[in-house]
Image 1 (cartoon, rainbow, N blue to C red):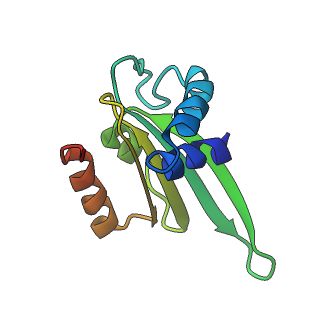
Image 2: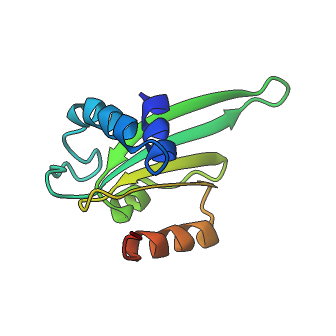
Length: 122
C-alpha cells in the first residue's frame, strides 16, 4: 500500500493515467480521517508514512501508514523527533502533492503548508 501511494505522488505529472488508476485502487481503503473520524468525501486526503529508526548497533525501521484530513489532525496526532515523514496529499481539487521531512522540522512544514495553499499550476 505504501509503495502504491508513493508511486501515485511520484508519477502524477509523468504518467498521469497510471497514477490515476493506482489512486482509484487505494481510495476505497481510506474512508475517514484516523484522527477526527470525519469522512474524506469532498475533502483532502493526507497519507502519511512514518518511519522511526530503532536500535543502536543494528538499525531497523518501524513503519506506520495512516491517513488524516488536514495538517491540524496530523499535528494533533503528534510528531516524533526520530521519525521521517513521507506525506502524499490528494487535494479535493484533484491535485496530488508529495513531501518528506524529519521530525518536527518547522521550515519543511512551513514550505509544505505554502505549497498546499498555492494555486494549482497548469
